[in-house]
Image (cartoon, rainbow, N blue to C red):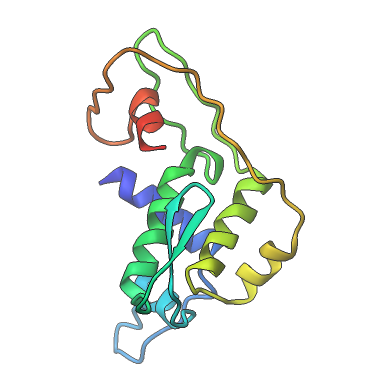
Length: 158
């Protein structure tokens, strides 16, 4: 569950426009999905790889676009948050930090799948190199112990 929370926090912080309140007696905020759905317009593209998108005959739904954006946030989480993958026993580790190039990439993905708000537009307007992954190959199987994925499991997600 913690891994899913990381993706939600990334989207809340870097993609979601100011959370709106509903008119209930408790004053609860709308869900992340509902908030992002308000910023979504129909589109006919789906992400198939790091920077590859394919056209579809029929438009996607808000749910499909949200899932694509959520998966992108999870895919790049060490570079979009302060959360690092667990270190494999005796293996390599990644230092987690928010990197501008990955923020720009996430916002470009958001725009490509149909989301648009002030945060997305501002970050898309920034200059950012297209980050390329250079992860070392590992021959060990990637065992996920729950919580955040280990480095090798994170590598397989990519």
